[in-house]
Image (cartoon, rainbow, N blue to C red):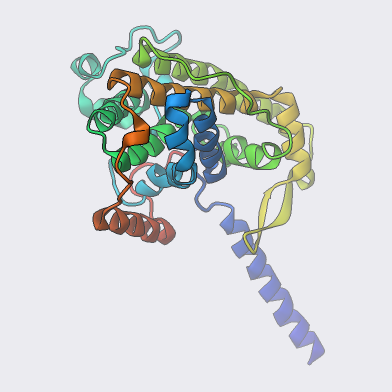
Length: 332
């Protein structure tokens, strides 16, 4: 009888391990929920005195809702392309033939083709116009919602694998590298080692060119992200690359702390630099929208009132996100 029980226990253990391994293929997110929240939060402190009072008062909202666009990918089929752009699908660097402005890009490539390749730099510009209008209308709730959203898309433009068709190492047998770079490293090192003391936001004379420059930096770094991990994996055995760790009350298989440390070291601070640049860019876009709107007095805005429609939308996003049925291409 003990042998039978032992056999049953072994089978249960085997299937539990399979389930745990499968859990590593679950959803990861652009920059990771943790990093997106941190980027929006720290961007507040780069703002000028005329803005920081209002934004600091609502910094919790801006951080919490920094992840709404990722949740929206589980509700809206057309959301995904707003988070990335496959630069290599346009040819080879320096990509100087791609129109910076949307209308010209549509005329050259067609809207359907652009949506398949991703539209993040153009979408950031669209969101900037929306935020500028929110400031002009003195609509406090819309200012906050749009500020949180644009912060997400700007940050995504800073992720190297968001500018590459091999976005999760699927073409090079490196599945999972996307979350490794943008989630595992920030969660492991940002709280204890990253420096987010950054200079003040600045007005962007040509915001569309600014965000394109960040996208081009991301595209240039994508090859390093992939090749560096590939080389590292060839000298560190698999049993040292992965570990079972508890996460939110569930034991899962993920990249080990040791391997994460080594990858972070050979990247020579790349993740921290891109995160810092994201924070600076988000604050500068917020500031630019405010200036373009005529620098309204944010201290005199009416109280922030979110509508029943807002709350219903957020509840719906949470339900569909938890259902884990992403619509459109998974950018990871």
